Picture 1 (tube, helix red, strand yellow):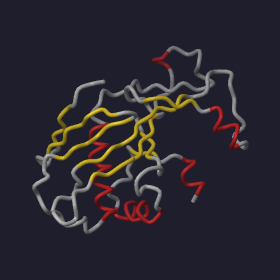
Picture 2 (cartoon, one colour; picture 1 turned 90 degrees about the vertical axis):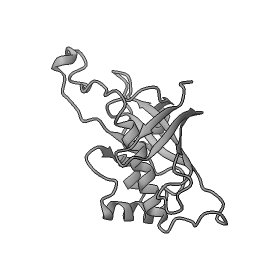
Picture 3 (spheres, rainbow, N blue to C red; picture 1 turned 60 degrees about the vertical axis):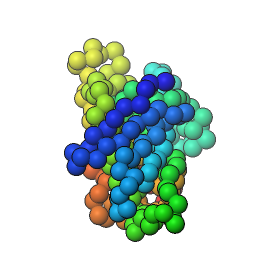
Picture 4 (cartoon, rainbow, N blue to C red; picture 1 turned 180 degrees about the vertical axis):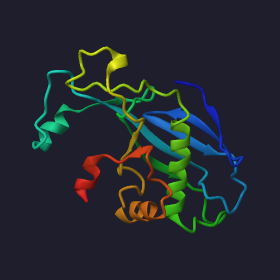
Length: 188
């Protein structure tokens, strides 16, 4: 397991990012600030979903077949578009010592912002896509894609449609760098 690393945000805040089982733990160094937008820490789960191997096909209309054919494994390094992320736990101090967040939606948006800041400062993956038509094409001649991560609704408070709608409305989170999985919207 990799050692903890320091994450320095543009506003001067610092976080320790520690690898944990199936993800990362973000720990704030600003715990003494009563009006902090961040909790003491949170854990995110990161995984990578492999594409089907060439020649394999899954019937897009058969949901059970599509789920059986997915290959999800532990995240090791960024991929161009196959990484998934969700917040699995939030570490909040005792409410007798610290006032709870005035806006849980804002707090979740800020945790996602810090997590995405860390993610998009990792080494960038190769920009080339492998499609059925380009599988035999040299890498440099393949189509290029945008670097994205799928933010899943599974996890702590992310499954609540209200929170995501409020975040999206305030435009704090959703931008070109974040791709929401298409399966997510079908469930709503």
